[in-house]
Structures are given as structure tokens and as C-alpha cells.
Image 1 (cartoon, rainbow, N blue to C red):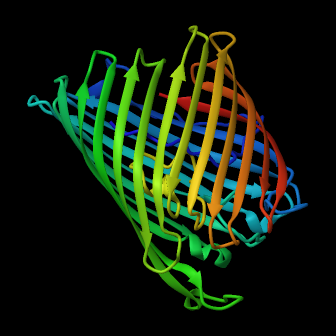
Image 2: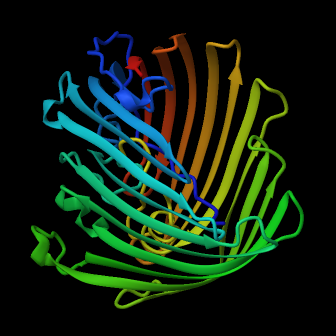
Length: 414
């Protein structure tokens, strides 16, 4: 059992344009069963009032044309699944930001008759990096973020009162812009622990977790760096004692929590940390139509919420990281209301505070994002969606506000 942090996604390009799609036949072996495959396309348009995420930044319109597909296939005790999406993003005026984005996720869930089970998951994504925390210094340079993760977990015990688990994850993020070189990092996370089932609904546990992060360009050697040679490397090691709890009344109503004592040390920079970290997430569905979700996370270290917790995916098209932060605290809230069988409304709020103990004389970076969206399942294979978002960031060197609105049309065939 491992509590997963909630990380916000990059703003999506969405708009009211239908898309054509070529059909694909399911393999003959599954001719009499629902197809595990799907393929689709989407077209969207978005208006962003501040595409560079800087003070008094420039607004623009852009479109995204995407192809997507995936499958989810049980095979005996095993399950194979994968999704892929690739999109071309075209800006109306700021054409230097035109880019191709992609997101690929694949996984294998397995189990044996000897109460042994586990999973392997891998993901890779590329997208324009948003500046809501990816860079301490503002920039209008075209900046693409590539992120990869691979994670493996194993669990022994099944439905027994006591179960033992182990997790390992490797992650990497890379940026194309010079201003974001200090955020290029790779990290490893490993944990081993035990769970004890107190009842059918409540499980508690404990674990030892170790982390290691390498940042090859962490510290600039000159006032105005002009290339990778003007930086020096740094690394960090973390040791954590985790206390875990998981209460599951149903798939729609549950709470998971982790409280950790964390010790984080750095090879070069004076950002060592000792103290409490942790996460708590909850889902609550009071009715069949209404559902709420929320999470609170506190992590330590460079890109702590990304590198320090084993996570199965990077999300849709982007990864949320905070450059060279000492600690990161985040609050995420969400609600969904199914107005009809085909129409749903959703809203969300994210607050994130990243502390920079030395990079800016002890300052903090505060980010807020509120969203309101609606989805209409026109048919089983066709979807229309619109979304409105309001962002703000307060930081001494780069505070900004931004409004984002867009709609999309998507068609899938199965």
C-alpha cells in the first residue's frame, strides 16, 4: 500500500471541432467479446491569456490535433494495458511555441496462486513546460519537458492478515531551455514494508523508504550561465520511516494516509531537511451522481513529489515539478456531478507552496489553479468537453495571472 500524491496536469488544448477517424478491426480471437482495443482522434482550440506565464505576459490562441489509442486485456491472472496519445500544437501568433506532444503509459499487473502479486508500469511524455513551478527564473524561451518513469512493485500475502510489499521506481525529467537546466534531474525510490489488516475495511502498515536524486546542473558557477559547462552537479539522499493507513468503505469512498519522518541530505547545497512529511487522500461519494476528492501532500527535496514517491504514471501530456525546492506542500480538491447519464460537470482547486531556503533568501513560491469543466457524451464513441481555468503564481521574480478556456471534440472506436 503506497499513498500516491496528486499532481496537477498541464493545461490541455481543447476546442469545439469534430474529428474524422478511420476504423480498426479487433483481432479475431476477441471477435465474440468486447474489444480490448480503442483508437480515436480529437481536435481542440484553446485561448490562453498568458502563454509564457510571466508578469503581464502575452496571450494567444492555439489548437491541438491528437491521435490516441490503447488497450486493456486480462489474460488469466495477468492484465496488460497501455495508452498512447500524440498531438500537434499550433499557435496563432507565438509560432515559436509550435510543438508535438505525446504521452505513453503501459503496465503489467500479475499474480500467482501463492498469494504473490505485483505490477510493472512505465510512462514517457513530452510537452511544453509550463512555468508554474518548473523554473525559478522567468523566460520566454521555447521550453520542452521530457519525463520518463518506470516502477515495479511486488506484494506477498493476498487477503491474509499480514502482507509484505516492496516498491522501486526510477524517474527522469529533462528540459530544453537553458533557464531550466537546473531542473534536469533523475531519481530512484525504493521501499519495503509490511501491512496488517485490522478489519475488512482498515489496513495499517509501516515501511522503510530510501531516495536518491541526481541533478547534473543544479548550481550555476557564474552570474549569467551560457551553457551546461557553467553549472556544477548536486545530489541528495533521503531516508524515510513511513506509517501507513488505508480505509476503504467502497471504491468510491476511501481514505489513504502516510506519515513519514524524513531526513534529506545534499552533497553540495545547504538544503538539508529533517522533519515530518506525508500525504493524505480521500474520495467520498454521498450519492450515485455526486463525488468529491481531496489530497494534502508534503514532500522534501528537489522535485520531491515526483521523485520521492513511486507513481504509476506521469499524467496526461505533462509532469508537474518544482525546481530546486527544499520542501513542497500541496492541496488538491475536486468534485464531479453527473447531471444526466451523458452530461457531467466537474470543478477543482490546486494550491501548491514550494519553499526555496537558499535560492531566493528563504522565499516561497505560491501557485493556485481553479477549474470548472463540463463533459457531454454525445454517443458511446463521441465526446464534447469545455474547460475554464484560472491560474496565479506569486514569487518575487515572477508573479503572474492567467485565464485559460477551451473546448474539444473527441471520437473513439472500439
